[in-house]
Amino acid sequence: MEDVLLRKVRDFADAAHGTQMRKYTPERYIVHPVRVMETVRSYSNKLPMLAAALLHDVLEDTPVSKEEMLQFLKEIMTLADAEETVRLVIELTDVFVKENFPKLNRKQRKQKEAERIAETSADAQTIKYADILDNCTEISLLNPGFAPRYLRECLAILNVADKGDPELYAQTLNVVKKNLAHLN
Image (cartoon, rainbow, N blue to C red):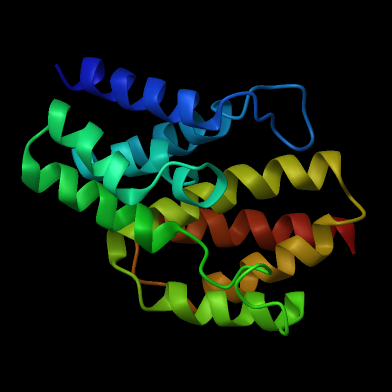
């Protein structure tokens, strides 16, 4: 039953992302949230976490609203799980983006975002670790020019957001540090 439900969430996320592709590969965007969800599944079987992992970039990167997301989720899961899923997605949605804070430079925005993420729930931070793990591996391989900057931004998040799953945290921190050392 859960896999059928997660397939519906995946399909919703895929439709929301539409023709969006991964930045550095010719893959449809949905491959990233699926990998993030699979990583999270290795550490938790909580349905809202798995669904939020699949949806973690929808509010940030698509026209879908939190109300539309909640409406969809209420049709396929309990109200409590739907609300928890949306809460996690909101926690994972970047607030300090250029459009909202045009007077802040990237470094300032990323610092404020790291501080914000530090205040999110342990479940949201666990999903964030999986997101960082997937992105940093791909970016390190496919954009070595940008990767050091990105990895330092990830390290800044990990330095303050340590409430999530300790094993995944340690793995993510190790991969970020190894990639950074390899590129420097």
